[in-house]
Image (cartoon, rainbow, N blue to C red; front, side, top):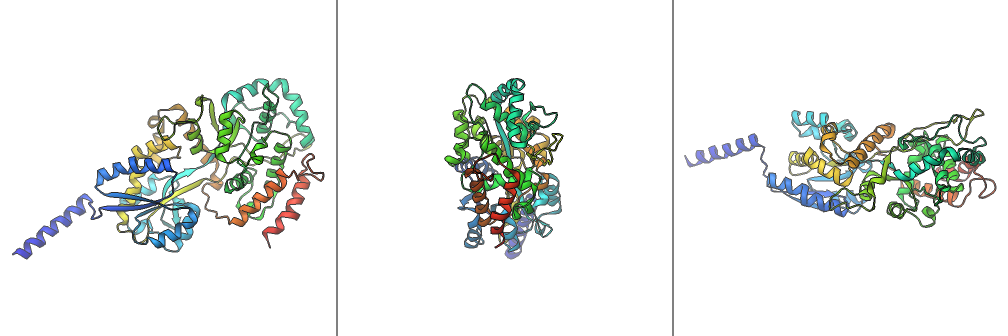
Length: 476
């Protein structure tokens, strides 16, 4: 009788757990790679709500860098329930069996929800099985001073002819036939960027007001990669350092450097993203390319984590990246080659280790973190691009701040333009990264873009130097 009574009670408990979805877990451990302020908000606010709702304690551990992730997964095997992983590292780890496919444990209803509601979920497939859960997307955008662009537009008509003469030195023609400076920076191409730069050089505080990351790092490589994509290239062009897109990109870099449109402090002082933002705050530059998260850091979001760096944050404008094109024009003044605006979208994903103690609970934590209330708060604070469709569909009412809403709209549209390179899972070895850093410094900083060093850049010379001096190094 006693035994039967115990069996009945245990059966009731098991049945109750099945109905209400309770879990024997009392603790979860997740492995992340976040900036300190984001980690603090994630742990103290986002996870606090989850812990209060589920009575499950979540411990957060950091890994040092993406290259060390495999060692962490081996070292803490069986003790990690959820891991944040950059897409470029995910495929090799998944194929080694570190991650559990979602369709091996999700209910049919939850799998349907995942497929219907997460953006770009298909890019988290491994061996044709859904494995990764979107965590965040990142794309660079064009950053500019609204007031300085407005001032340049007022100067345009009076300076059109002299700028055309300036450009004739570089392309043998001048402004493209029928050229008109676009008032909306999201409509700019590389000629518009050059014209704006020339106009800023001619104002009362004339100077070189455009810059990009130039520190010898993966950031410079990513800029070069994106520039090649925008000039019409693809990952094969980058891997082989070959083709019109590569030569057109370095031709533009040479022209913008030689003409003084680029601020030379960017290579003299090795500017990274932090230095770019500082230069913008000081008024040394008016235009640059930054990831959306840095734009939010620069502007501020009204939250303690992002107080902003500007005295007049509403002057900060965001736009799509300039369309790539050739410097060269045909005999009628038409641009010979046009590219696009797309670059690689960077992304991080949640993955569930194959031996996680309860994969379903791990998935539900990842889902909870992207549910609208939590997701909206994190997106609006840190400039993360949304990963859930219902958030995008209701963003108009969810996000009240006008600047924040505009920033998210621009970044989402940039991701659309990134279509061909929508998610970057390409793993470039340090050899490739160092190769392009050496090429950029060897050509742009050393001014080796013409037969006579420092003279007007010659597209044919640039192509020859790349093919004869640099390309052989890739195929040794």
